[in-house]
Amino acid sequence: FTPLPPKSKVWTAGKQRSAGGSGVKAMSPKPEGCTKLFIGNLSYDIDDEGITKFFGNVDAEIKAVRWISHKDTGDFKGVGFVEFWNTEACEKAATLNGKTLLGRPIRIDWDASNVN
Image (tube, rainbow, N blue to C red; front, side, top):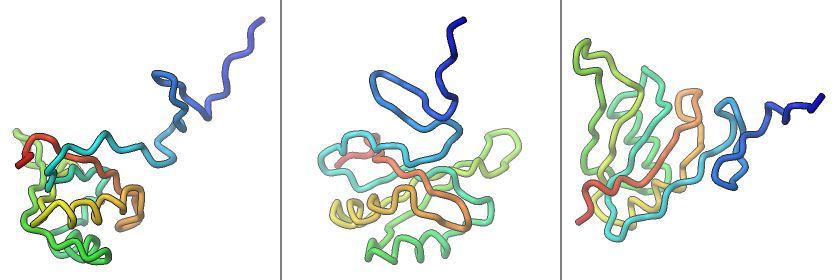
């Protein structure tokens, strides 16, 4: 009989991560000139005003927000992209990865698709 590893930890590519969505996922490497972030695990109650205030807490002024919806139903998928005026604001906003927004830990990562 070989005991199974504990369910509380998952090993992926040599990195230990918490299972079940707990903990903060590390961000990918920051692309040079990045001004846009992916945001996920969002409450379905989030809106432009709420996300603007959230990032305003670290003086990260938003240029644009794009919420992602299901292409057939139009239902909000709980994720989006936020563009900032400059890389400094983007970096400040990224420090909020894992912070609670409307009762949920927000997932933030760099978006390399729109590098200047």
